[in-house]
Image 1 (cartoon, rainbow, N blue to C red):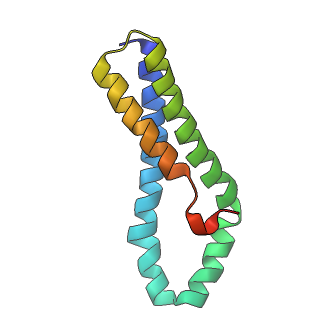
Image 2 (cartoon, rainbow, N blue to C red):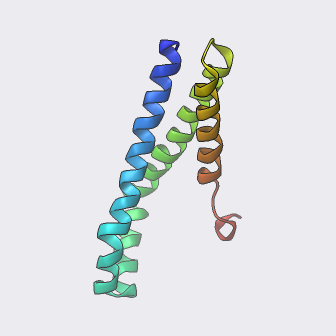
Amino acid sequence: MDSIVRDAAVAALLLSGRLAGLSLDKIIVQLPARRRMGAVGYAGYARAADLGNGVVFYAVAGIGAAVLTVTAFGLALTRSTPETVRVLLGAGAGCRCCAARPPAGLRP
């Protein structure tokens, strides 16, 4: 496999792994705390955390992971890459693009 494709795929994997870790943190740590704090208390915390530094951090991480994954797939299509790698990167790029799309209720 081409080293450029490999490096792009590894970068996408690392950033996507970071997002998975953030999701686990929400599920395992923050949501149980919400039950103890109550909805109003947790809403204050969430506004302070997610609308503060979180806005930039989550946007860069989410968009960056999508761009890296699609880039790795594009590179795999243009280089001599095994079909299995192209299929897996294509599936990853498709899933990442669907995950990056905001839910229907949040779209303008």
